[in-house]
Amino acid sequence: MPSPQPAQVVILGASGDLTARKLIPALAAAFRQGHLHPATQVIGVARRPWDDDGFREHLRCAVPSLGDEFLARTRYVLTHLESAEEYRALAARLDALADAAPAHRVYYLAIKPELFLPTLRGLHGAGLLQQAVDGPRRCVVIEKPFGSDLASALALNHALRELLDESQIFRIDHYLGKETVQNLLVLRFRNALFEPLWNQKYIELVQITVAETIGVEGRGAFYDGTGAVRDILQNHLLQILALIAMEPPASLAADDIRDEKVKVLRALRGFAALDPRRHIVRGQYAGYRREAGVDPQSETESFIAVRTYIDTWRWGGVPFLLRTGKALAKRFTSVRLQLRMPPHALFGAPEECHLRPNALTLRIQPNDGVELDFDVKEPGPGLVIKPAKLDFDYAARFGRALPDAYERLLVDVLHGDQSLFIRSDEIEHSWRWIDSLRNAMRDTPLYLYERGSWGPFASDDLFGPCEGRWWCG
Ligand code: BG6
Image 1 (cartoon, rainbow, N blue to C red):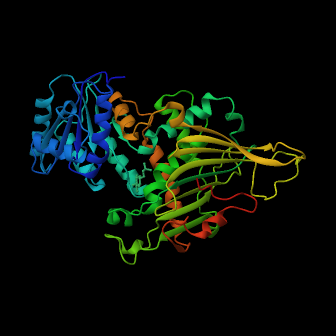
Image 2: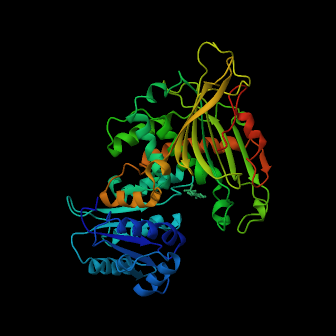
Image 3: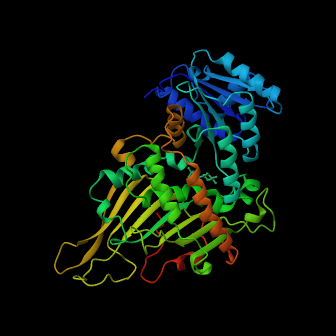
């Protein structure tokens, strides 16, 4: 569906890594497939001494597959954005560039978090954020990290409210743009098969993993001040959890979905009442302290696993085990719902108590798909029971690679659709829970783990007896 009106996508911080690695390839793909209005302009704004051609050359080197038609839609504005004068000059330049009016305008903040507010204040001062009723939209896309704890997120939300309406703010979490994450809603609410089982009566335990094989990859300084809890758990992992655990929304309207996600985040049990050593395991991979930009005495966690609960009617008593880490054995993101044993052991108990016959595994990435484990009778004499599997694979079913998450999300921004973006109260409730976790973490040891392993062995102990074990892809 093409964007209904022409738009200017203004990337602030356009010389950075995110622009070349994610934003430009996503915009180019959306343009190629006709998902953007043909008059869309992509305007890079940065301090590098480039002109339009210099910017295009930089993009072409970074993304050799870019077509000339798309490159012809790119422009560059060289500015330091340090004075009101420079913001006014930017406003004049953007107006002059708008070759088809009225155009929506999206400001993508691909800049350091500490520059979010000064930049937005500058844009506001130059009249760049004001939008007329029924006029073209003026939107702002804000990358994570959105705050570093509850207090800073509250302060940032408060400051944003003075400059923008909530409907203009798109807090991006690229996991929400992944097809398989969006499929969670379809799987749950389009199929009569799953939803009746989706509660504490049938589900015994839920585990969610975001595992990466890479280390800090040249981002040592950023990562060391962030850690696994704030880099992945607070955002990507909690967003998946909210979609898995939420009630059916009244409609697919952005606020109906987000209302339900907020209820889940509010119901997450804080750690004040839990024994930290039995609910939290944190680790750091061997060699982390020697990574460039990392403090040689660093106590930052590159692995975190927690056992938590969602205190609602639907999920009362069901453990949710969440884990994420860098430098692990395998890269994958998955959700596994383990079903309870049938009420009567007609065929006897499984030989190993942790082997439950039924589990539903949602493979978010890679090998995106869904698998359902169940037991069958092995053909032949006697009654020998063996595990079997139904397996759905996206690539095999649809025969094409899934689009990149940024592509979908950027097109949604241009359509003004906030369903896959995070509302202020979602951010605040997730930070409230993360703050409680980070407080409790202080009373837990930081385990060292080998690169290429599954993290600290202690994370296995988060499972109770007969509750199973971590699924490893
Ligand atoms: C980012 C984190 O948000 O997500 C990175 O900052 C992480 O540390 C990345 O590597 C993972 O994203 P994906 O899409 O590769 O799973």
